[in-house]
Amino acid sequence: MNKSNIHAACMTKLQGQLEELQSAIDKVQESIIGEENSTAGNKFETARAMGQEELDRLNQTLNHSLREMNILSQISPDKPCDSAQLGALITTSKKSMYLSIGLGKIEIGKDTVFAISTSSPIGQQLMGKEKDGVVAFGGKKEKIVSVD
Image 1 (cartoon, rainbow, N blue to C red):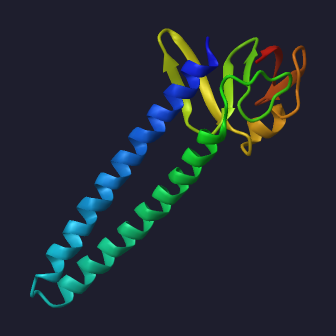
Image 2: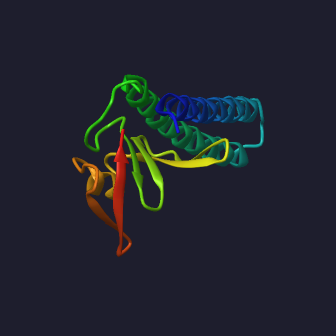
């Protein structure tokens, strides 16, 4: 499993999420504009308020995703890692994890990697660990087989 491929898959997945969010924002904005042209009184105000709440929620999610993209962009997948840190690929006896941002399961061919944030509980447990270290997830111990 190649860190460059994993990093590229993370970038692609996050870019897709950003595009979906922007599309949703555009649709809500169109809906709000459409409601402004309505003359239905209180119904208009309620629909507009709901649309604005949805727009605010989507914009918060978009801003969070943009911050995640910034973090991901700063990771150099070619940099070797001796210990678990941002940009490290950690393989335990049971799974592989890429310490980057919280994107969850990433499938590359027949391989599965979990993109996890360094601020997540699992990420915090892994930080600084080296090969042959032991971590416990959900009460189950796993040995770190490699850190790259």
